[in-house]
Image 1: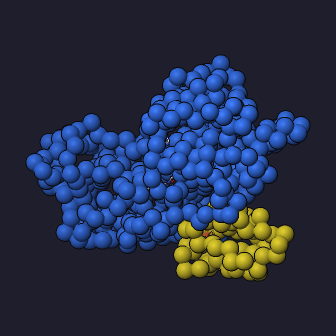
Image 2 (image 1 turned 30 degrees about the vertical axis):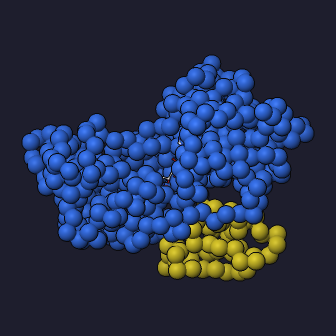
Image 3 (image 1 turned 135 degrees about the vertical axis):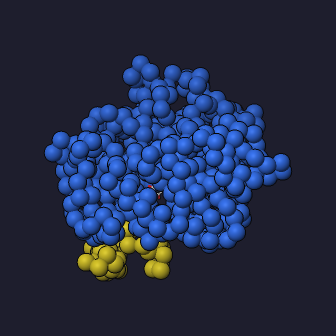
Length: 404
Length: 56
Ligand SMILES: Cc1cc2nc3c(=O)[nH]c(=O)nc-3n(C[C@H](O)[C@H](O)[C@H](O)COP(=O)(O)OP(=O)(O)OC[C@H]3O[C@@H](n4cnc5c(N)ncnc54)[C@H](O)[C@@H]3O)c2cc1C
Ligand code: SF4
């Protein structure tokens, strides 16, 4: 076994966040060893198309793979193994194949997994998080298929729209009273429901799935009000859980993900930041001073890239041990949250954190909701988020206002 | 650039090279020079459609 001094930087989680952290280490001039340990067998790929355009055509790894860069060609990828344990004092990670991986610095990039219903296994039950999920789901989206989507967040609505476009019969069942209401507010949520209904998607809102029918395969779902909906596929889009269990034996603060400071250093329950442990991507709960100093997890696509770059740069500076570390940590880090969604003809794009808006702080700024529109989200008189339905170019100046 | 869906993310990373016009269409204004390599690498990273490829 190598001594800690020659041990590599170990990145746990080999998806977008892990990839971006590895690239950023190299970009910042770090030339030592980098090992990525990841559960998935696939090289890093882009998840968003898995509920949208790619799901409507052919789902393959080539269709969604991230380009490989020359600078990270010498990274040691260990695929198909999961971390089960970490020891921050001995500086090791243990994986489920029994290997112990020593590290000189650790990057946590284990992201989220789809939450599942506590119901018996049955073919026809589907999650949508990984490439393999999307491949399995695609095979069942024939034009005679009856699909029930449980959950009306972005993911549920996107899968519903894609399935409907493919000719499936689609019902969205959701405990919420409007689709995507938590991130977008009632004004935009109501319009999204209208557009889905205009395309023939049915809604059962304020409901959940309680029971499944079927012997060898799903035939129907029963709702909590007794209604029975015939279904070949149930897509469970009910949110996600953080892959943080493997860190349970460490002093890290594992409340809702893993807490990090604005340098993306992992933070212990006693508030101490670790110079040798970093957190990136969906699982990181970090403060963004663009808004305030409250640490939050942000499940948007730009976050693995922005936090991966940030963590890679700070860590490279710590590893270089050239006196630049304090400056690197003190650099401001205020990544602009941005997300988008395609549902039927709707191209929605958002900047900032609309969910921070006051209840009465949501206003139409431009256009008409039934067509193209821009909606502003205010906390007090400060614009904290903006959502465009179409109008992509007109949206850009508002992005600058949010950045302040 | 058939993959491009005009999200305009690249515009922030490399403004001299990419521009979103008033019809919400992306325009490719210029070829990158060597100094702009980093900007274009960043544009590749932020493009949701993976629509930007660097051709040396
Ligand atoms: C279908 C879909 C559509 C989306 N669409 C959009 C969109 O339109 N716009 C938007 O802004 N965002 C979207 N997102 C969100 C975006 O894709 C995520 O924010 C991003 O993928 C998070 O990347 P990550 O690397 O942090 O985590 P993940 O992608 O979750 O990667 C974590 C990796 O770690 C691995 N792992 C987990 N536990 C362990 C362990 N113990 N040991 C080793 N490896 C482990 C996992 O297998 C996985 O490969 C979408 C997500 C999905 C699933
Ligand atoms: S970021 Fe990509 S999708 Fe968006 S405008 Fe630029 S090239 Fe097009």
